[in-house]
Length: 409
Ligand SMILES: [Zn+2]
Image (cartoon, rainbow, N blue to C red; front, side, top):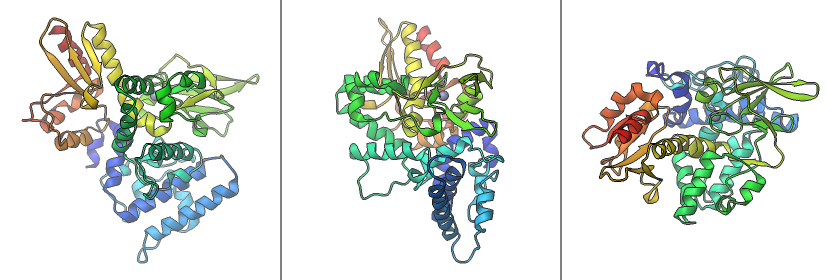
């Protein structure tokens, strides 16, 4: 299985973590959880050192227990040392082979958090809410899920899936009526960061309570900067030199150039590009802004980007488009004035095409006559995805193909 990740490379590896975590046994999951929280405690400078030390010891205790009585766990020193630059799979009891966990690490050799670390904290860690930094985002998500009745007080907080979060948020928005639902959902896609004043004008979003303070992991010196691609707050990593690296949490955005370095010159911070993108975003004050927490950016904003962009492109080419029609049965209802043809489009942005193929196969509704649209960069996976829906009447095409088809109809 390892080799299947070479195509869409590390981006797929990070996106495939949820599936890989599901395949672990209980002890391996407990060990992973302990390692993730310990890595966050090790790489953070937030709060007092004593509190972080206590948390590290607690994680080590859980880590040792996960090895059971027969196998021997490494010492505390070895444990904390190995969190740096060790593949995730090699940290777990029984060293599970052949999953994406073989290709990810929590901290790099310098002890800097990897892009998988925050994602694993949100997706895979039962104790992620305890961690410094990202923990605030996770606690906010939990209180939101409780408020909309999706997380009974008695249940554990572990491993909240994308489906659970989407279901909870969309159901809560729909309760406010179809108009408010569409407006609220579109705002969460297009503006994952708002000023407090802008937020106060959107009653549905205020009531949903989705936005929160900008996470300490994505600010520095009271400032933050937006990713040019998704408009969310970029992660801030403090370098020993005193510079701060800013990078979108989305690996694809980062690879495409959402990577900058902030340096202090004459008492003000200056951003310079570290990737191919030459446009430099503005540095904005944290005060007065609110942002979606990590999980809502991951499961509402990111998948929505292609949906709203596709809508804009289709409308510009003369089509009529309804976004998220009929209680979210699919994403776009497309017609062309004066023509009889209709497209029912479901946009699938998963960077993990194998997980997507599995999902398409398992869809209890049956894909029917839907068009599944995947981003252009997944074109190479069309044969795989088409095999998954064979015989169902559904089609799979890329966004570019769909726009050309609608224009030519
Ligand atoms: Zn981004």
